[in-house]
Amino acid sequence: MKPVCFSLKRTLTAAATVVFIGSQGIAEPSHGIAMYGPPALPADFTALPYANPDAPKGGRIVTGNTGAFDSLNPFVLKGNAPWQLRFFVYESLMGRNRAEPFALYGLLAESIETAPDRSWVEFTLRDEARFSDGSPVTVEDVIWSYEILGTKGHPRYHTLWKQMESIKATGPRSVRLTFNTENRELALIAGLRPILKKAQFNDDEIADVTLNNYPIGSAPYLVSDFDPGRQVTLARNPDYWGADVPLRRGTNNFDKIQIDFYGDGDVLFESFKAGAVSYAREFNAEKWANQYDFPATLAGDVVKSEIPHQKPSGITGFVMNTRRAPLNDIRVRDALMHSFNFEYINDTMTGGRQPRISSYFSGSQLAMHQGAAQDRVAELLAPFADDLPAETLEGYALPTSDGSDRNRRNMRSAIKLLNDAGWDVVDGKMRNADGQVLAFEILLPQNDTQNKAIIDIWRKSLENLGIDVKVSLVDNAQYSQRTGSFDFDITKERRALSLSPGNEQRLYWGSDAAAQLGSRNLAGITSPAADAMITEMLTAESQEDFVAATRALDRILTSGRYIIPIWTYAVGRIAHRREMRFPDELPIYGDGADWMPQFWWWED
Image: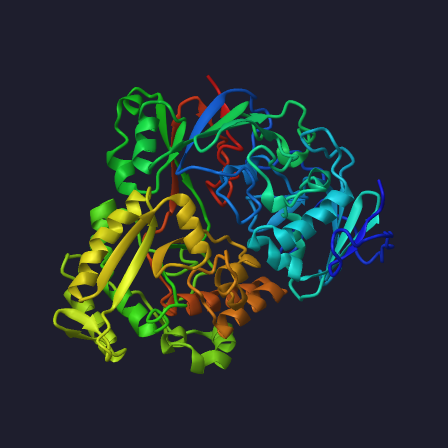
């Protein structure tokens, strides 16, 4: 293997010579890393605390996705790939312990080393690490993966690349990343980037891969079969290199995972009831209580399991695109929030069983406190007070109704807000001074039956205000294209947030991401205050400062009226075949894409 050293300013083909750089000996290699303090698990841990190391291997499960797919490459903006591929077919240098807020342990890498200020991070690869074709995972593969994803991959990978000063081989199995930004989380984020095989794409652009030329992975599963647009089958690799790595013991136990695609959620649910699908995650408490009494459940062949968690609520609801007038006017956004009769909608949709999200980090210690900002939170917000809504510092709460379908008080508030913003009812329509009718398009995927039902209720309130509303239901490919290019007024939004939010916050709410096509900043938020709070979060050296910065960010986002929140998912709900089992000990993050089915097993 030739040693490698790529400067970020060079192209992949321009690096003609390579060197190893010497270690400065500033820090010692470790088996893991945590955002704050030492990692909780010792160097000799044998399995994650919520895994069953003795879980049997075997069985086949079928899961269902809505829509279709036209790609098996989850690393580029082009195409629509099954989301499960990133979790089961590809690996990173490190992996998470979901029993800690944010801690990583070695996966492809056997050790990690950082500078005291985390200005650089160095990984040492495991000698035994292999791709699914049996070829070794090399330093060249690692360096190429960071550069190709950071320049030609999906935009979500570009931010890390821009914050890297250099990436260099320091030995036959070691590589160092040096950062150009003060950001203590970057060392951890770098450990989670997927590693692909360089030799596979020597002559091809990774973004131009076909269904038959998808990236080779190193994870426990590989794509064994697929029917374009209809079905993908993942098979457990019997020669998987990492079966004895502590992070992997007791995981990835099913022999096959089949992913079937359905036109909409209703058809998928009927297939589950009929036994064609092995499990279903349910996000509607009313449906969970009243629509899971079908024969398979009554006979005990299907089991209903509830999975608690300790993570923040995150934000789920309807995002308003502030790049477009008049949604760039907070008074208009506030009027729309007042017109959204959550209490009535919640009673209609969930029987009032699910509490409303009250802020982006509600339900956790990171959530903003009610009332005026205090102490360190107030200090952080004070320099931006003139540019923020007064409620950011004084205290903000979402509008509430009496639960009736009339919502009179909030509708009166909405009319006043629109009047203040220059809109008045003329001939039954809300118009501005030029006579233009206030109108919005609400964009949804055609298979999103739940959000469509919510919009049908809200739409009546908007029309009662004299607002013209167009609801556009489009297929998944068109939905991805339109949201990726910010071609919408209002659409659905779901951002799950962790107990250790960090670099991803720039992607969700940062000003730089607002103009980046394909970014996750759907609202188009460009707030110097939000940018500053994210920086404070990323550079905090104590848990206390980190929590204060996060609470300040929560105030900015919530009082900014960017997203109309609906209900929180305080517990995970999974209905599954009785043969599917999971450990008694649960991670603090509860259910998630990397918990179920990764830590489950089949037991007759």
